[in-house]
Length: 498
Figure (cartoon, rainbow, N blue to C red):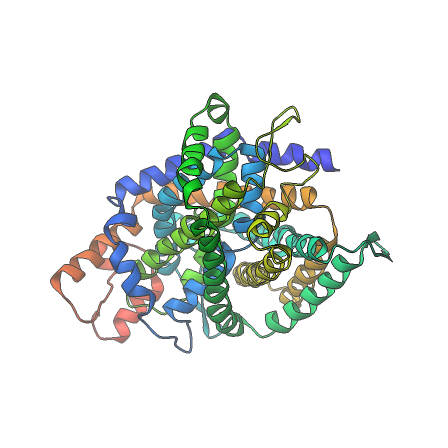
């Protein structure tokens, strides 16, 4: 089974997907005239503008929900895996995919806002919605929705819970085991799996607002604490920083990087971490209450920076400065770093050992606690994404109990993921991410080549900003954007259209 999963993973994550992600990011950067650079101050200003309504969450809450999906296991265990299998140069390619991916995040999130709907008193939107409306291809939207429900409801929760289980198991350092119907597992993993499942159930049965209110407090707090700990390690090893930066940049352009090790792992883990192009962050973006679709696109572009350029870089520098890594080649050989080949790069071990180098006796529990909150909030984000796509499916196919079945499937996946092997969990997660990325990036490219609605929205927003308007409005008809029914109706209600 493991060999079969790895074979499928290799097909999904072929070099074609790697270069499609990079190429799409470059294309969108050119089309938007590098919006991720030009509008950076506006991104900051928009973070704290807007308020939640009875239908939608606030701009900051939408950022927190999307960050809860972006900032997770990928920032800790994912960065370790990128270095462990792709070498230090993989970090450089994570930076590249983040910079280019910020423009992709702008485009997909703006599309999410453009084509959102009101469903049972709350905003819903995502790639399935905008693929159907902008391309007129409902079947394609259905394919994305089904794949995303399976990926976010079954495959990906196991990755997050697995990282929590492994981190706690390493921190506790207990050899106690527990016999279960699924096999014999470390007691710490089983207990942690049960804790995660119970707390997750309490929150997901409370709906999107409970998720938003929880994540808007937890995500910023944990990200700040984690980055501060990294800054302490960097500050006490300032002399090592030039060497580490040189190692990252130099290794990024070696022959091995060109053959796909650094580039492939950097892009794969970069997309897994920051979700740019994956389509998952779009769901939270569509739920936001904003005056103009481009506003949430800009905010979501900034979230990519937070995830990769801040949190992932913090992890990478801690690992590389302390030497708490090794590089595994294609033939299984190990080189570089200070750790034994027995340390699994797919687990949080690299990061825990790196923190322990600076804070003796603190590294394992600190990373375990941090990872718990990062991964737990990502689990909440996965549920919301899967729920949104189930809602999309239910517009046509009315199956009683479908939403309840999703809740229990995700809880079961989280518990099982907490106790199973890391390699299998990551391989399954990579398949889910890769399939969503293929479907989403091809979709937004087709939409952009056909009509460029996200670029039209950006020009309209920038024109209003330049004119100094005090209240932004959006008229999709005037811009030649069709099927944006929500915004057309809003315009009519405000008396600005017939």
